[in-house]
Amino acid sequence: MATIKDVAKLAGVGVGTVSRYLSGSASVSSASGEKVASAMAELNYRPNSMARSLSSKRSNIIGLWVPSFSGSFHRKMLQTIERELRKRDKHIILANAEDAKTDKERIGCLDYLIERDCDGILMSCPELSVVELARIEARYPKVVFINRDIEELIDKTFCVNHYQGGRLAAEHLIELGHKEIAIVTGRMNAQDALSRHQGFIDRLAEEGIEVDADLIEHGGYSFELGKEATQRLIDKKRPFTALFCGNDNSAMAAIATFNKQGIAVGKQMSVVGYDDIDISQYTSPAMTSVRIPLEDISINACHQLLNLCYGESLPIQTRFEPTLSVRESTHSVK
Image (cartoon, rainbow, N blue to C red; front, side):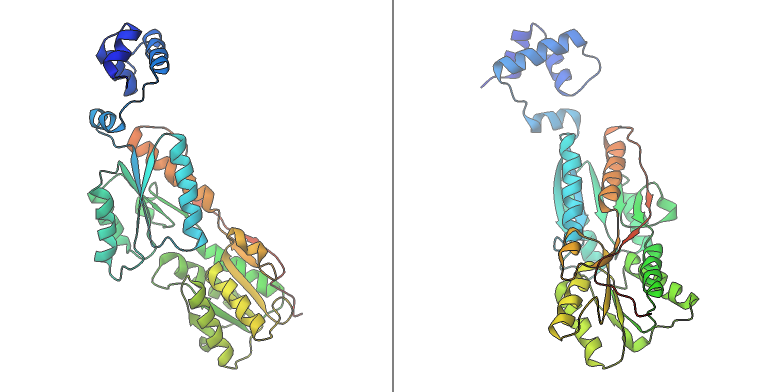
């Protein structure tokens, strides 16, 4: 197996020149760089990544912290970020807070990534308070937050206007003539879930429509929780013609539950989801959902972390607007 000394000898340069070339140093002339590259190719030389990281004091590893690996939302986020990092020869270490019950346990997941010498960390952390996030940023400046809106950290927080997302869902149901409306919320201790819920309620109130408290069920982000919440609404025997769900998993579970009960979605019942994950258009009927530009958010957050960690100057956008994808799960009652 070829060594760095073999490369230097064949290229006719010093070992230091080869080392600087491998670390990306600008002090290596283009002529010397071409000789080193040619020698590496001829010898089929592969630099030791650990040795390179030690010399540059960089691991070329980015940490990603998410609440859960389950569900299409975070899977799409992970795929997008991993693809962007791979383009720049960076790698990823994952941590999730699936079983965490307290902020202390959630922050323990962050410590896991810090201890593995990540150059920077991306965090999707809807349940941590603004105070905790500010403490994290002060302790570990090379961090970027996804799906959070914090004015004091505007250049490190990347998110969509969830309040407007809730308003879009309400506006659609208002236009269709719905007045008796039920809600299955997301986790209401999360900033994004609370914002979309408030936007939905506020837009209805502007039209004089008040949601009956008995028709609001607190759900989560899983199919099972969505199914259970929808069944509770049905069991109450209170009339409603439309249901807004805090995420697509809950909405898909609701559609399945209504269909099983003989309630035809898109004809007798309107259902609106949130996120517009890829599978939304393949439900039966295809689901109307508020679309979150998750790929754009993830790419821009990733670019900002690359700027912070590796001195790049990638352009970024921190705030995004939702849109509404109208499909067959909603119908007019006018």
